[in-house]
Length: 129
Image (cartoon, rainbow, N blue to C red; front, side, top):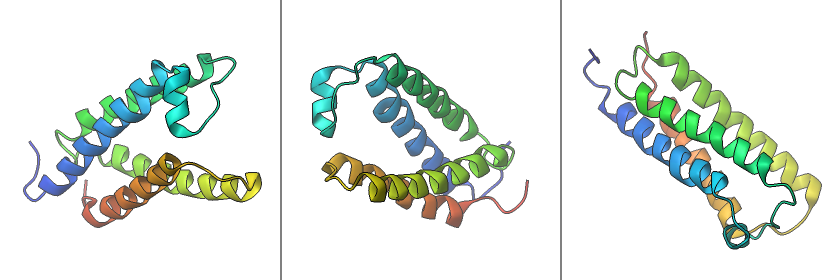
């Protein structure tokens, strides 16, 4: 049974799980040239890599939705998500400095969403397991 006071972290995990599942997962699995045009990216010559990453995001989204049932018990999932967000931000900024190209609005939106969820996860992370 989940402890009292875990409502905020449950909501964060559900919302971020749905973002992983739908926005980053299913969008990559069903990748199409018109979808990649929305991102300002070129359609990959071999979309199997995009689909593989999409399947990984679907699994991560489901893991977050299952972890939202009892966040205190699933503190490891929350810690992994915090590390994921930190690494995403670092690699994004390093990649941005290396390619020196103009990136689309959706890429900045991904960075902003990740940063917001990192702050929320750090604020509402359960203190004890």
